[in-house]
Length: 147
Image (cartoon, rainbow, N blue to C red; front, side, top):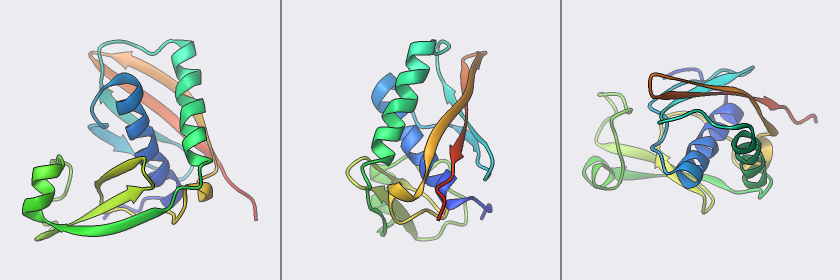
């Protein structure tokens, strides 16, 4: 398993669901999640304009601010494949699939670590977006919470 940062990884889930809801696209087909900055790639037919970038950021931060509980449960591989796209899971994932739920906002299969509440993520900051050859790349970072 990759060494994902729980805060950044949970923010990726919220970004993905927000892209689905705002732009009716699929979840990212490729991502690179790091503690300092991350990126997600989407099949998309155009670049985002400045207003869309601002609204995307605001929407994600509103979701983060809802203090949504992050939970996991397991489904059989058969049941999970009927409900979810499992193409990004490793081949050796086993007979059960871990499903991560972020409140009433997002549910998807995942093997990575997550926070227990969206309030632990911090502030989502969009670094930039770019569009080339039908691929929209979204780069982001988090302003970390201080204890």
